[in-house]
Length: 182
Image (cartoon, rainbow, N blue to C red; front, side, top):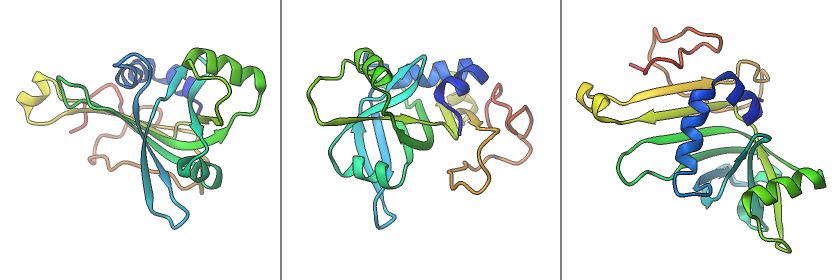
């Protein structure tokens, strides 16, 4: 499981595009999907915080926090921009951050209110996807899709893997993230 920082180092342009969609309204805004105790999905609006240290989210005492504490699998999707249907998506595992110094740095960066019953989670990145639907893509009849998969993901860990059209394999992680998907 890669940290956001490791992903951003491996694919800086893709990471920047994803970050821009999550932060298009100033601070982060997206939808967090978690796994309920019965295995079903649960979706919540959240304010992700992206720093040089990683991808984080402050979560108050709630069903989504209990989901993350019990089963750290998550998916995070950007809020759609007003002018396009572009979208950003990341998925992986959430883990609680307990280092007080790190919590304080992220709280400052994310303007998290003090004295609130929140817990900080760091989100690792198993898969990252950016979809662009600009005029050129619309003219071609399909969006431009970039996908990154963690090349070092632990075997046996359940993780979402997107369906990719055959013949698009290449690059270090099995996908050519520099070209649009067919």
